[in-house]
Image (tube, rainbow, N blue to C red; front, top):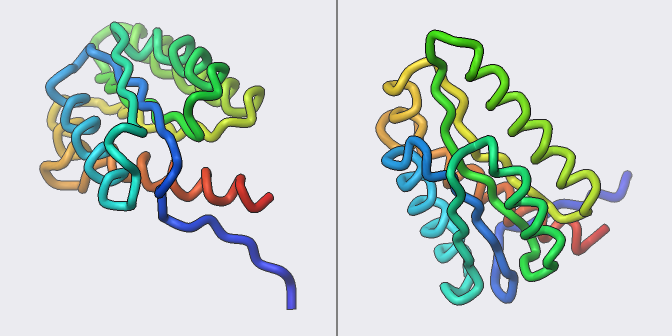
Length: 154
């Protein structure tokens, strides 16, 4: 029988940083509130959660990089919202945001949960921020919890 290693969903004694964009703030703040609530419900102390806000999704990779490099958090949660418009701007912002955040995780060794919504409409974003399709802030927080515990076992 193979050895199985799994991350647990417990955060007692762990520290988390949330990098959140202010653009599309009404939606992002719902993601932040849900992520914080999920972390606290899974044993993370309020004092062990730091929320850092930046202008938009384009800036998230740099903020995530600084947070990871500081070693003050066991994991970083990136939260934002990019809604498609009538120009290619969406493709540049969403794509580079995702690439930048992925690069930080790969190079830093610090888990980074990707909770940046990339939707076609405001309605889709609202649905993913708690109205109909759950809340992706919770999903990102749960990913961060699991990854922190998994990394501790590897």
